Length: 113
Length: 142
Image 1: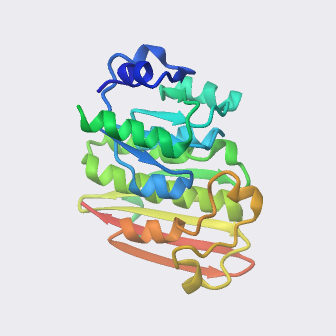
Image 2: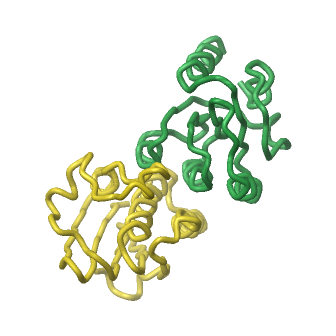
Image 3: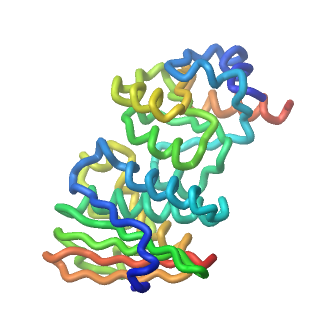
């Protein structure tokens, strides 16, 4: 599944790197708000679901080569975060759902191919 | 420490500079990619350098990370000037952290840093004189 499909199916708001949505394939997912946990346990190509909004999430996603970040509960990423994500080419999207609900929906979509 | 002929780079880190957290790790990652180091090794080194970097930002005044690439191993040597570590055994326990709220709010300070470094290293050594700083060596074999 591509990021574009995810954005369409779950009505995500994309905040940057629109040009990558069509071509970025999601290979899996990870949810977490502790950066060390995500750093140690997430895999490349994953979509990362988090409630964190500050710019350090971009460093983690970039180092781990995530497909992108989805911020939950309609939270607004900091301006610095979006600027850095644009520079580093890390797509950031926002969902109105809670972390629990969103992860459930993404998991289902990934299972169904 | 490996001989200077294997020194790939020295990277400087400023304490409390959370804005730049990860920049050094990105540079090191790029440098390893350019050298053609296998992806699986680069992923391990990225976790190690990121945690070392965040530790310095969180707990030191300033520090350096030195990267050595030998034919059979990559060594990360992280040295800082600062508060150091009171109880090294305790500091390596997963979940133990002395981080204050300002650090925890950013999603750091979960007490996983040193545990992660250890987990991804083949050789891991850490020493500290409280009040002076901390010295960490991590080796990933190729």
